[in-house]
Image 1 (cartoon, rainbow, N blue to C red):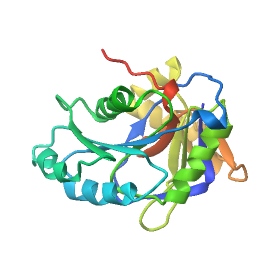
Image 2 (image 1 turned 180 degrees about the vertical axis):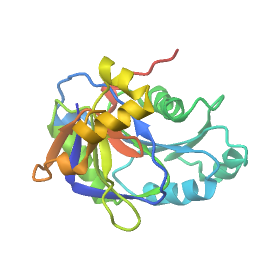
Image 3 (image 1 turned 60 degrees about the horizontal axis):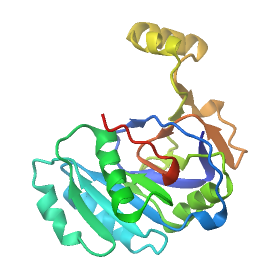
Image 4 (image 1 turned 45 degrees about the vertical axis):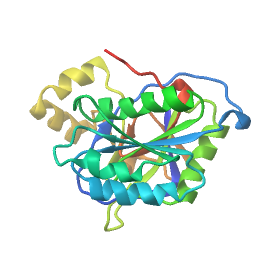
Length: 232
């Protein structure tokens, strides 16, 4: 499963939101097993924001490698981001824009091929604000909790408001049928709370680690050894 760390906070600076549905497997880990922390930052037509964010992250001792993935931006982002390339930062470009998940998987595959498949992988949008101490908290959870695949914190906007919906149930077959109809989905969700999304009012924030089925894709850390990439 995934988890939300209620004591960790990060800020989403844009109003746009994307969804990331993950999958986990159990795997025994000890504190010594996690030796590398890599971050994948997906860029599309936003090279200045990506540049500033990458420079902020590169100053953190906690993060060993940063992979900036340009998702075939038509604004020449890839060329403009090349100046960031160094021992800690790789700047690569996808062969085609296959969407958000494919772009991030392209970066994860680069990490596995160049730095190995053990350690922690962080997926991050460039339009967030996060501090090193928050990243350390996520890493500590993954190091101690063997049953957790991925973990994130609470998502706030630039007005310091907690995102109303920031975790999801993995969809069942009935849910997929319901979600195919906008009207039916909205009616059932309003009447019975039925659907894949979980509103913040239904979450117990007294728990330090809140287990959940799916996390927002804008920022999370995961056990790289459990990451499975569908290459089809």
